[in-house]
Image 1: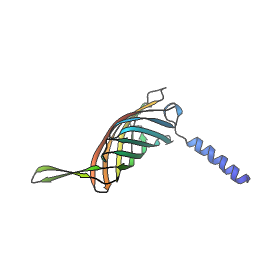
Image 2: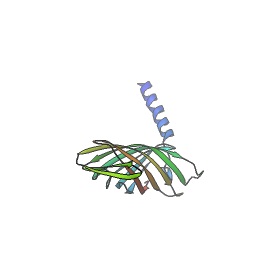
Image 3: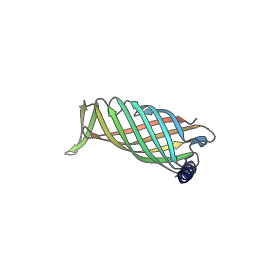
Image 4: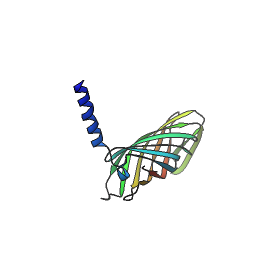
Length: 170
């Protein structure tokens, strides 16, 4: 009994010590995202330079409702406490009909192929890169991001996600 209590106490201290510091020292933020998708977003900091961001919305590669999550690493390329860059992989689930794009060249000419997919669920992977702006002494985060989206099910397709948003850290 003593060992399990001591283990839980040490584990709690380690977890609290490893908690990230988002804006104003908060680890959880929520807000809106505009672009692809248009909807809501949340972000949970898991370490000082790592976070998990999720979004839910419409107007996407899949056509209707879309739920996505990304694991992000933040980089201090500007040597600033206000502006940082981030990057990471993600997974997207789409519900409803979607679209697929193909680009190919034939005898020097570019051709685009477009196909409508009427499946119920789609799965895609993405790699996102973005710019994160956290003004000093404010509970907000402003972000701009882009990255390729690669649809893997029910068929192969590609798209480019571009979005901007704001999150509030209560």
